[in-house]
Image 1 (cartoon, rainbow, N blue to C red):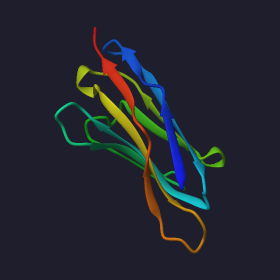
Image 2 (image 1 turned 90 degrees about the horizontal axis):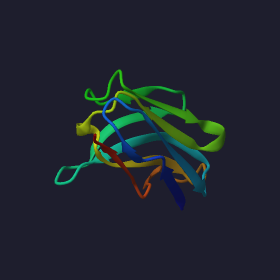
Image 3 (image 1 turned 180 degrees about the vertical axis):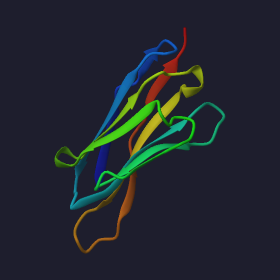
Length: 121
């Protein structure tokens, strides 16, 4: 099993910044990819950004140029730097990880518990 603990959310004014963190622990042989998703009230969970072990990243169009995902492979941690925040960025943000417990195991998907981000004046 892998546990993901995400943190860093809060209340911020429009135009402000926040940095989310997510640390993975447990039975980890390798983490293939880590990412962030978000879910606003009444909406489906949507992709925000993902990053692979070699640093390749992908972003939702709505956050390109404002958000940056990064990863510390040694610490099994992923970060999301969010700048120029807008009210429409308000959501619960969830990190996830695709991880293998041993070299013989198939990759499994794990989720963090979520952290609330509220952008409001």
